[in-house]
Amino acid sequence: MINNRSLLIVGGIAAVAWLASNSLYVVDETERAVKLRFGEVIEENIQPGLHVKMPIAQTVRTFDTRLLTLDTDTSRYLTQEQKAVIVDSYVKWQVVNPTRYYEATAGDEMMATRLIQPRVDESLRNQFGRLNLQQIIAEERDDLMDGPTEELDALMREELGVAIRDIRIKRIDLPDDVSAAVYERMRSEREREAREWRAQGQEEAERIRANADRRRQVLLAQASERAETLRGEGDAQAAAIFSEAYGQDQEFFTFWRSLNAYRESFAGDDNLLVLEPDSDFFRYLRSAMPDEDS
Image (tube, rainbow, N blue to C red; front, side, top):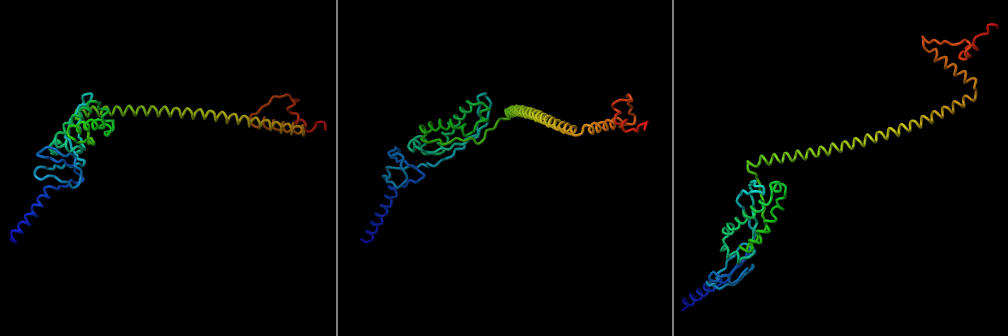
């Protein structure tokens, strides 16, 4: 009896443990789940926490809802002018509708990536086909991918229950047959810009030189005017002093001027003057000679 009772207790405990393990389940914080009954979804988007299900008849599928990365294959796209570019990109995606995701992919992440990649390729092909090569090179890559990201996100939410959070370009290369032409165009563009900058610099230099010359002429004219004014004032002051000195002793001043005239006239060895003996020029010379009669 004791052995049978022990067996019943152990069996009961095992049954309770089995029932608990098959009836209780936990959804992690990074996951969402759906409850199935014989493969049919009966409860959608189960949130994190401890939950209950019916053993055997019901099953639970959990899906990782963290941000996932898909490295797409390197692809060759044609631009608006039918020039090829080699593009390497990646996609950030996330499960947002567990039920739709389960119905479209059976919860298989590899299947999801196989469905997403051709859609990304198509979206990028359309985007690059709308742009010319100059726009692709010049535009910011983040802005370049805004349109495809929004379009693909709306499509993938409906088809797969996933959100496309971002499409990023890792590298854009040119085929060898296009690179030489592009580099030559870039070189020509830079040379054109350099010529424009040099022309603007030359124009600015000419303007600065013209302003400097004009300023120089103005300063010289002002200086000349000032010099003439000072010279005139000096001449006037000298004339006034001369007149005042002459008025104090006219005879002495006349004598002093005559001496200066004699000095300047006979300064050289070859100086020769032909004058009348009674010329006024010899006035003071005659007065300095002794009188023959005396």
